[in-house]
Amino acid sequence: MSYEWIFIGILLLLGMVLAAVPLLVNSVLGPRKPHLLKNETYECGMETVGDTWIQFKVQYYIFSLVFVIFDVEVVFLFPWAVAYNQLPFFAVVEGVIFIVILAGGLLYVWKKGALDWV
Image (cartoon, one colour):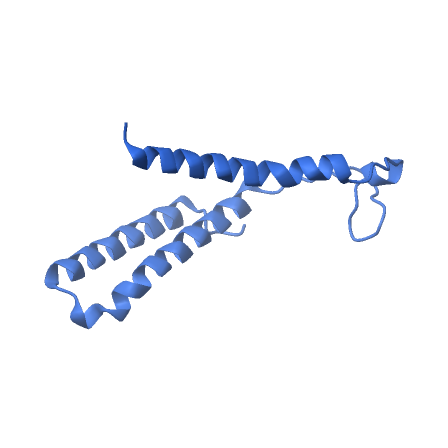
């Protein structure tokens, strides 16, 4: 049996225990004072009027998802741009291919109309 897997198992078990212990301690030691006001919807200290369930357009989620994806990809491109002068030709070609794939994704999202706010 490989000893590396034992350490991984111990770390997984320790991670689960460290996540479960605060929840158990809170359920045992936490105050229990149920009240009707605690179950009401709270929004800026004002009582809600009418239906509180408002459905947002899916387009907002898609726009934010595209933003996060391109933001993370900029993090990948930053070290490449900093070390651009020291990179071999193969690494420069790989970076250009990565940028072309990003541009293709942006064009696809643009053509699908996901970036329109209307």
